[in-house]
Structure formats: structure tokens, C-alpha cells
Image (cartoon, rainbow, N blue to C red; front, side, top):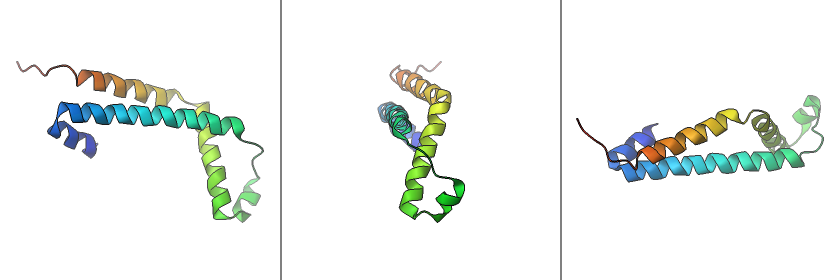
Length: 97
């Protein structure tokens, strides 16, 4: 939030750029999550997970995060739409009344 406040203080264009970048990163993350979830094979049991090396656990955790995201992508899609709407709004001139 602080980043967006600084960008707004800088210029509407800077804020628009930040909002568009965030929306793009979320959309790319959603696509990567789908790709990861589709290629995920059998997941280890929790006991096996504890015995794995850190790199292996990290890989499994990324897969689990991806599967969780793919099972409920609505909040991410809603955030993307909201960011895009906000970015469009920064293109409009600010009217003072």
C-alpha cells in the first residue's frame, strides 16, 4: 500500500504503471500455478515431507500452493479486474469541484 501511495504522490502515470504491473504479475502467477498443478505428480505423505531435504520440500510447497490457487482462483481474478479498473481510472483527468 505504501508503494502505491508513493506512486500516487509521484504521478498518476506512475500509479497506473504500478497497478498494471501488479495485475500482470498476478495473471502470470495464475498461469504458472495452473501449469505447475497440471504437471504435479503424486505428492508425498506428510511424514515423508518432513524427511525431505529443504529443496524438495520447497518444490512440494510450490506445487501445493499452485494446486490451492487453481482450486480457488476467483479472488486472484477479482483482484486482477480491480487493479485493471483502477489503472484505467488513473488515465482519467482528476476533476476538482
